[in-house]
Length: 209
Image (cartoon, rainbow, N blue to C red; front, side, top):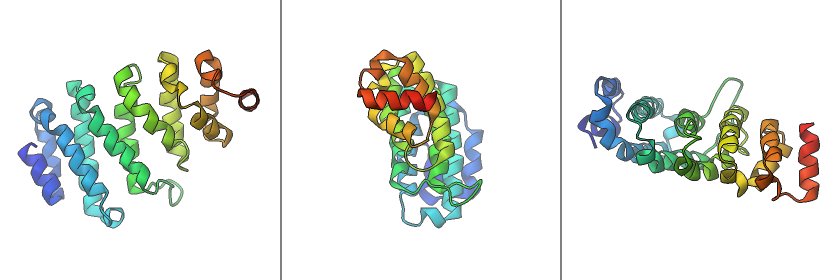
């Protein structure tokens, strides 16, 4: 891991976290997966939800990492570590405690989501991401669900068969009111619709109409 990343994450040093943006993307690119793994350790600690310093360090580091991944076009190299951190958020509470508020792990999930799912036209990344993404649809966070469904609708248009194995989970989310947008795309693509029973398909179609 790059020395500065090691210092910031190892010591959870908020005072040095901003210095990460002074480094060239290429200089830190080789350290990104290891840094993501360390962030996963920090965010999984018992006191993370109440530790403002650790949350700030993680937020800054994720922003630096996702920026570097975009600028170096290295999503396929670091996609596995990025999705692993994203999936770890599912182990924690994602329901907002109040209006215009998010839990610490919902913030992580949101910050990572666009970096992953904007690559909806890259099948290797979507193969990693879609099984995790559909799990977020039923976790009680409407904003996450809305944004997730928008990205996955694009994935459905580009390569619908990536979603076919997850039809049941998506339809369940639709019928619970999570995302009507999804229903349209699944209804549109025959390879997904064939997986419905007649009763589910009818209900889904009527819900959209």
